[in-house]
Length: 87
Image (cartoon, rainbow, N blue to C red; front, side, top):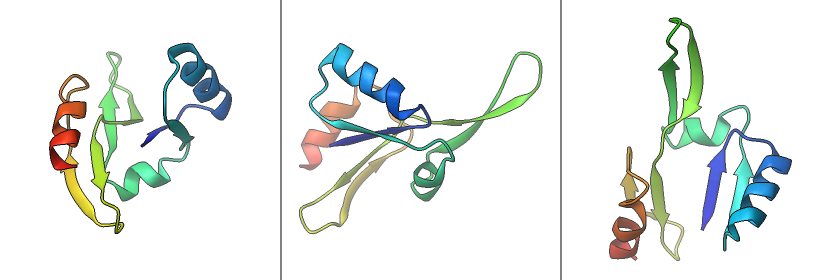
């Protein structure tokens, strides 16, 4: 399992250690991976300006490297159950 966000490598290290996560987090500051998986979104701030962000989604890739499931968007609480159902 991997997690991807635009946060820095150092931020990911601290977050992973603080929560004792059993998976790696990938830094994607230029939204390359997010764009490839259609997870890059544009958010509008209260002042009307826009910012690029990553929408929560998950992709299940099977042992043969095939995409078995995509949930986009997905709620954090529902993601593990949905992913496990596809595994």
